[in-house]
Length: 229
Image (cartoon, rainbow, N blue to C red; front, side, top):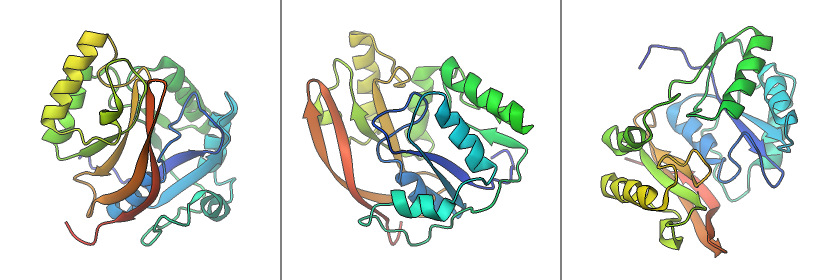
């Protein structure tokens, strides 16, 4: 919408149990988003170790990783890889766009990395009103699903749920009652985008719900792009 030439979608693929910076579950959906958007994908393997994962991101942007090897080691056999074009060289870019909302921990580390690379760091969603942020998704044609939940008030029925207009209003009301961030910025939940205006076809994700001790996840077993709208 701003007229920028997007060179690649960059995804940190975490092989460890957790990450302070990046989402861990269902991130292969970014590969399908890339294929559907016609934008090359740059997957970067990281163990998710604190402070080292940003170094992994920097090496990937600089072309110092084996993208094909990383892709082959991380991409599940049950996911369709047709249409995915990998970005295998160093990124010749002047800016990096990230989705940080309010986490100074995340933004400052990305900003410092971009400074070292001599490129701009841009977070277009920074300090957006959380309620308006959530209401924008269905309004602008985004199909967003909850891939994990870990907050009081969110039971197993929310795992894998599509966030339409009614669901988002219910989520906002629940967040007010149980005092958590309606946009999930505090780790209350994670999301996956299966369709958007930039995608020519939607993603079809198949998985199972898990639930234990007030936390649940949508474990995706396979994914592919739909054949038509």
